[in-house]
Length: 255
Image (cartoon, rainbow, N blue to C red; front, side, top):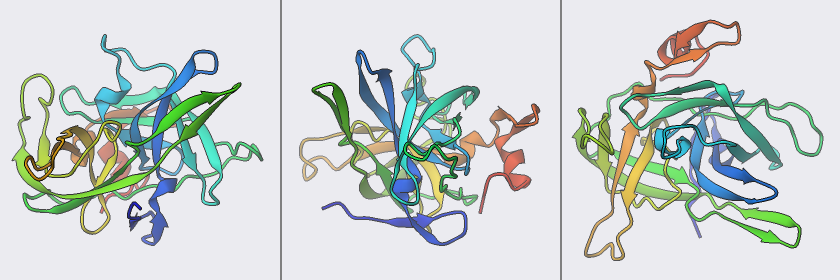
């Protein structure tokens, strides 16, 4: 049985993270849906972070459609579509900020808020303990005329083992990143990474899933959350502001 962690939410209280960590899907009812990756909320009305590469096709265009499924505070499923107009991606680092459409309860159709995470302003250090929550074991299958999705939130622990402020390489991870010993499986890309205080410090970028962890310890890379601070996004009033400016004005939480 997977461990269940609690992390700091906006009020500083402990919340079940399944309400703020969600799987991304793409597809349609005719051709079927498929699971893509993991994302997490940093704003109560759908603002999220994830790895940039999971949102892009091979030609650099955005995956379309992009759909998120998560639970409200009562455990009811919510389906939300990606809003392309409010999307910002870093040119080098593997991280992106986006916005999902207003959440609507499937049964009541009422608009609801989503829990979200507080970002960390602290510097990440080698040997820092970390943990991540993601949906690597998700599955969608068609049964009769219905498509049934099974999404399992799983948790992995580890530590920071190396810092790469100028990137790991010129092609796959040219932006700032950190090497870790967390076991990151396929589908965990984009999932949130937390420090020992439960604050959001980054997102999963890539990992190598070795057959034997005894002979080959886990190897993965995360992209730090501060790489989104300079990204520009469009506000509700129509203006343009950076993520850091929104933090300074209290719209996003940084601690």
